[in-house]
Every structure is written in structure tokens, then in C-alpha cells.
Length: 166
Image 1: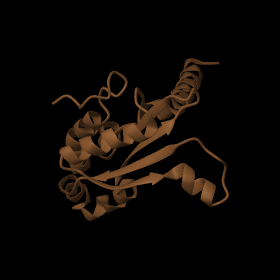
Image 2 (image 1 turned 180 degrees about the horizontal axis):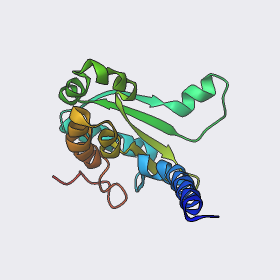
Image 3 (image 1 turned 60 degrees about the vertical axis):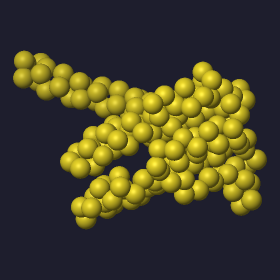
Image 4 (image 1 turned 180 degrees about the vertical axis):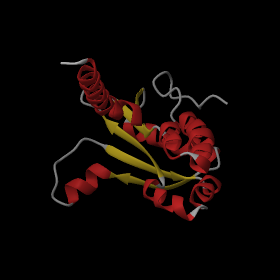
């Protein structure tokens, strides 16, 4: 094989390896997960208090496990979806008609669920990374105030369940 062929082969192999690495890493990068020292319902209550204190709105708390069961699905341990919105942030993201497709990710959702070992787990979308993927005003909003405020809603749950730091 000549040098050009070796280069092309090496380049293709490098791109393929990078692709495999991205596929492996994406779930860990796109979602953030932590343990809460509280039970599922207590964790939901604390998060909803923090959300309201920060000027956001809790649009709903959906008992996903109950909905799945009601509609013929499996009997799941507790899974709660805390749907939250902050109108100022949402209006900035949706102001540009080209960005309105991002409404599919609204409202922001925080999942609180029972883990495999019975522990309470909390998962959020990585708003900062997601925002940077879109750029522009979406990045300024999601990677800025949304990411910071979202982090405060779920901060220190493993330690004490105390109010988030200011």
C-alpha cells in the first residue's frame, strides 16, 4: 500500500473510531444523573419548592409509572416527571421562528425515580451542552441561565436534601 492509501485508510479508521466513541459517550454527556438522600416524593417536593423559589413554574408532576400501568404497561417502581418552565427563558429561545422547533424540548423536565437498588435518582438533560449544539440565542439561554438554574434545583440532594446554595 502506498503512502496515500495508508493515509486514507488511517483517516477512515480514525473517523470510524471517533464515531464509535461519540455514540458510547453521548448518553453520559446528554443526561446528568445523581442520587438523592430523600425518597422519591420528598425529592419531588424539594425540587418543586426550589423551582418556585427561583421564579419558574411547575406546569405538572406526572406519575409516569402510574400512567404506564393504567395503559397496560409494566408495573414500574416510582417515576415522576417534574415539568418546569420559565417564561422569559422560553420566549427568548422561541423568538426566532427557526428555533421554534425546540419547543419539542419544552417544558424542561426533571425525572425523579427509584433506582435499581431502591435509591432515589434524579436525571436532567444537560441544558448547557444541548444549548451549545444549537448556538446563537439558544446557546446563550440554555447554556447560561437555564443550565445554572437547573443545577440549583438539583444541587446537594445526595448530601442533605437541604435548600440549594445561593
